[in-house]
Length: 326
Image 1 (cartoon, helix red, strand yellow):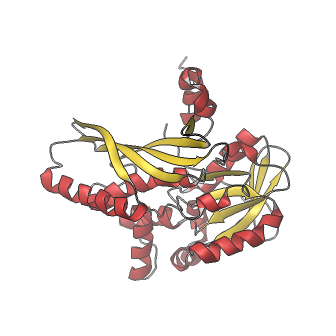
Image 2 (cartoon, one colour; image 1 turned 30 degrees about the vertical axis):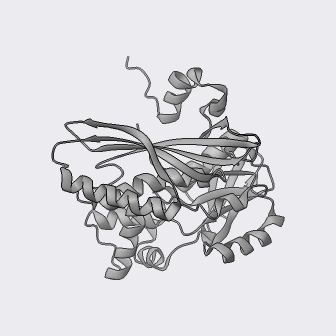
């Protein structure tokens, strides 16, 4: 009889959680926290992207580099941390020549200037393929102030930054799928897939108000499920409240079934957080100051799991909650 299939989080719990240092938070969060100078902690995060999975073979190398860096900065923002620097590992086939590397490095240079960080080291190896890239990002935050996944409480509201579903719909468009929308809308969605916008200005402002937070990488329902699981609560998402860009709204108008991409498509890299309802007025101020919309999309309840409801309060079946690596 075949051994049972382990998903990503079952693998982590079985094989790697027993190895975790105390600073690794039981491998139940996106980051580790280690003590820095007096009154400060360093926030550590690593993420990898793989050709054909997280980016397409013909994506511009500068944008590949920027996506690699930004998905890591997004996790720092989701803890409320300020970026400090990063380590880079590249595993490249011979076809990725010096011209490709020059453009890749130019993308990193542009984002280093944008986010005020620098390269601290890393490694470079050869591979027959596909291209595999990894960044270990380091951020800084006042000791004890990082916003973790585990603080959500029944009665909290559920909030997200920005708009949802753009990247998942952008993947469809980038692969040649016809969304039935205008070329400018199609280009906008592809750009949202290729170039995430880490909310580094907004994240630190939520410290002390958000009770739990992470970024949306695997998909809204799956990632809210991670918060709910660690916090031992349930989540209710009201689909009518989901913030959509004009391009995504146009795509859904042509095919309402594409709501599945908004709920479980992933690659949004928007902040997903919980907080008391009384904090919403302050969040509106933050949204005006940073230019990043913040939307309440549901609530935290007693229980377990995540439900999504329509405008009439009826449950919507979510066939794919998020991306599964294994």
